[in-house]
Image (cartoon, rainbow, N blue to C red):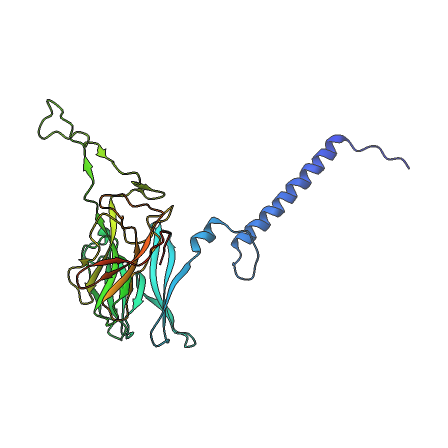
Amino acid sequence: MSHSPIPLKQVLAAALAFLMLTAALMDGKVRAEDEAPIVGTRRALSIVDWLDWERASDAQISPDGRWIIYTRLSIDKYNDRWRRSLWILAPGRGRHEELVAGTNARWSPDGSLIAYIGADTDDEERGTEIFVRRMDDSATTTQVTHGADHPRNIAWSPDGRFLAFRARVPREDERRAILPVPGRPADAKWTAEPDVIDRLHYRVDRVGRVRWYTHLFIVPVDGGTPRDLTPGPYDVGARAVGAIDIGSTPEWTPDGRHIVFTGMIPDKEGAEPDPFISHIYMVRVADGKIRRMTSTPGFWVR
């Protein structure tokens, strides 16, 4: 029996219908996968997943070994910013909960207190400050610093009476060119005078113009005026490409008389520090006398 050939139009119509049906099925499958729960399924990652990710870091074990405090980083989807909080957990005992908003928690030597970095209670828009919180049921919290500029890298003294930390100080060598402009009214709001830049390393990748130094301070645990142990035109902390610095938490000596830190103090007065060379230094807390501990220049981090 002979069959007449199928018209080309019918072949194309059937092929098109098949493709449309396949596309519809695939679209339904993709939508079902997107709406399915993450646990127990396999699917491609999406932007929504990234917004739900959280990071844990900087775990600190209490002196008695019963507690761990760590920093938890998440994304505030509604305000488009990072959210940093401190969480506490008791290994093997089931407790795991948020403690307080903040970061950089450090236990006191006896474990009765923690120091941490949190938002300024006087003015949240102004920045962060150092707080001390009791770890008993009272949970009493005290703001230790007021007006510190970007404090970080907290370290307790061995006797628990002082906190060492790093913070920014404005550069005193910043200046502007004063241009004589005839006929300028006294109250005129003209463009500001240009900045004068006479140093080679004045910008940092992903940060931009650097208008500050980072110095080492100490402050009593019960509050007071922080004391700058490293005044001068240099930074405490090793600097890295892509960031202003990479940490360098100060370390107290066991007797509490000195603090060890990394930095970039020029050998000659007035010389510009090399951002890729650092040394290890020791400062005497009583009078601020600094002694360099390393003889070989390098990229000392801790």
